[in-house]
Image (cartoon, rainbow over all chains, first blue to last red; front, side):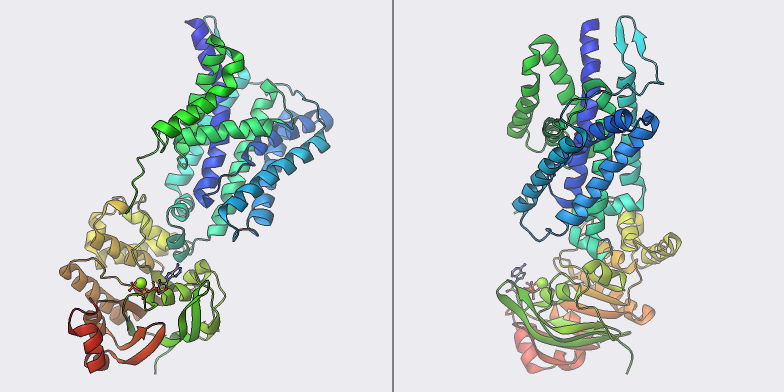
Length: 291
Length: 242
Ligand SMILES: Nc1ncnc2c1ncn2[C@@H]1O[C@H](COP(=O)(O)OP(=O)(O)OP(=O)(O)O)[C@@H](O)[C@H]1O
Ligand SMILES: [Mg+2]
């Protein structure tokens, strides 16, 4: 039992990271109907910029984390304004290819600037680890869970309590009608990308102390986040978080009881099962097709 | 003559290789209803969508109070006070009635918008009863009222309505047409009304025109067109235009 709970906690912690990656996909998808395959690179950037700032520049974690989040957010902003906005009249597939191109470019740039070695940073600290019987929750894990909790609340507040957030939802549901209300779809798209990049960057800094930062991390984090977003029901923020947690927990259980080598495949097996059995996602509403 | 709020001059526009509007001219004045009638596919919605900035202009001009808005983005045109209630209503179905109205006044001071919303509730008591309901769950007539209310929340100078009577019961249609008259009379709005329900649209119109195959083929006062034998034949007579 204790072993199981320990495995569960590990899964939830990793699932929180996947959930944050999935939130990035969801927020951008809602604003522009685009799957941003560079989203995983935001997590990668958060990690490598944090380690760079701590190990190379010698900044304390409390400063380095905001710096890493800001760098990631700024790159999201540039990506939207300079690349996607100028290509907005291209067809959808071209835009998706562009995001893949950006992902490769960011990966290359990160390797160039921060090197190809994986690097470690100390845990954020301050919060003590919690021991209940023989089950322990690591300090960094608590940081991660608390961050996701606060982030979820903040997003809930933004999208359901502020007119600005409602305008973003309106622009995603009925883009033309939103424009007729004076809501700029371009602005909504930029803000969505900045949010996704900041959330991704934050997730990347949070996981750097537990799983080493590397320029290569973006791809697998992006795929896991994408799977979580689709499993939860693409476009549904709550579903994204739940999808992330589900994949994290099932991965962890698989690694603990089946084989750890099988862990990475399981997320995609879930993705495929969901796409076959429940294409609208676990938390998604049934898709009513109009004739 | 009263002030020209919106002027469309020799407007040519279309989609891809297809030209739909072949030089349309019209103008809308303060406190007047201009009704545009025409058969399916005449280009009525295309005209409104072009004025709103969704369809690029090939030639001609669109001016608001003398200033060209021909190259502006839809959101900019909307914020300048030209509000378009689109065909099919397009309410924000997941948001509540009140949230839809608040978004109508997006970017304007909250207190001002809230005061306008109270006024909109006086015009449409039904919306007040349903202020907390998700817009998508309302009836067609209620959604039409909401779509109009959403445009009114911005206190527009020009209101463009695309087939507000579509799919609605006669009593609801009458209510909406009465309201359109009130907006003209009490608020001095310039109104561009596109309708297939030609009789009702011509009856309340100050000025009217017939759009057919992307051209204005007739124009005059509402009463003139209402009694014009060609118009009667084409739109008011039998089942031809229904
Ligand atoms: N998005 C589009 N792409 C290509 N052609 C279009 C598009 N929208 C409309 N058209 C064409 O333009 C012409 C005018 O259409 P429009 O919708 O403006 O007519 P309408 O007068 O509003 O008709 P209705 O009374 O049926 O609403 C039609 O021939 C239509 O097929
Ligand atoms: Mg039409």
